[in-house]
Every structure is written in C-alpha cells, then in structure tokens.
Image: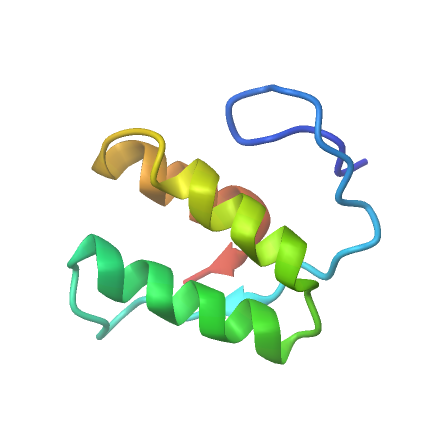
Length: 77
C-alpha cells in the first residue's frame, strides 16, 4: 500500500498513479531529473498537489535522496 514517503513518513498516495520515467539519456543535473519526472507524473494523471509533494520531498535532501524519492514514487529506468 502506498502510504509512506520515501523517508518513511506518513503520506497517503494510494489514489495516484506510479508513472514510468526514463532517466537514461537525461542530463544528470538534479533539475533535469526533476523536470523529467514532473512531466511524466503530470502526463500520467497525477494531481498537481501530489507532484508538488514529490518535488518538495525530492529537494529536501542530497542527490541520493532525490534519486530515492523519484524511484519511490515512479517506476524509473
């Protein structure tokens, strides 16, 4: 059940899709990765609130936390 954040806090996102995001070939810059993920999340039908939550969580730590967050909420390849 999708009810936690990537760092273990409670967050119910069971009503949101888990989109496929291809990061291979995307510039490894954190903002490029977040832009690609944000775009795919919106295309998959995620709410603006959910996308904002994920982006805020992704920016709350270092580069490793960014990757963990994106892989938690998206199917990343």
